[in-house]
Image: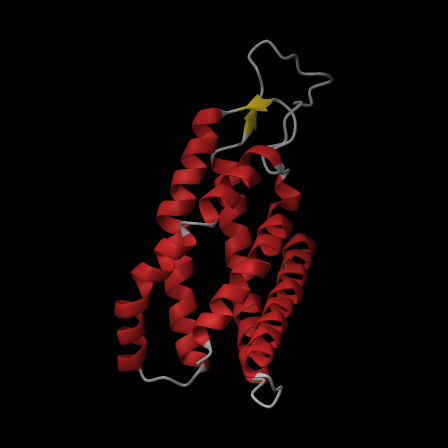
Length: 190
């Protein structure tokens, strides 16, 4: 794993752990006691994040390489045989609206469902649920969870694609994920 993926994984893991701690704190406050704090829930979110951040980072990297956010204007000159645009970081050049739209649509149409499915399945496995129970959770929880995510993640995704340089997108997503993680934690803990 390269250093950028490692850094993104560490950042996401710390922020996701914090979301679990916040969720447990909210539950403890609601119950009026800390007796019911479930540290295993926080650990499951940490493991989930460690497992899913690297492929998500690579997915975003693939999207950026395939559909660069910014592209060189035709009138831009190449100085000393070095282009002014970096396809991976998305720096330099002008915003390419078609590429940004393609990335947005692919991320929301493919990335979001895959991540939702991974969440349900991995959490089920870490809770030692049977295949039939996980399948039942997928059937009952997939669409409500995906649609709940569509209330938050499209805006985060669009802002990330248009405003945030590639190297900081995972961090911005992880910060938004802090609140999302609290929501998921509160809905996973009974």
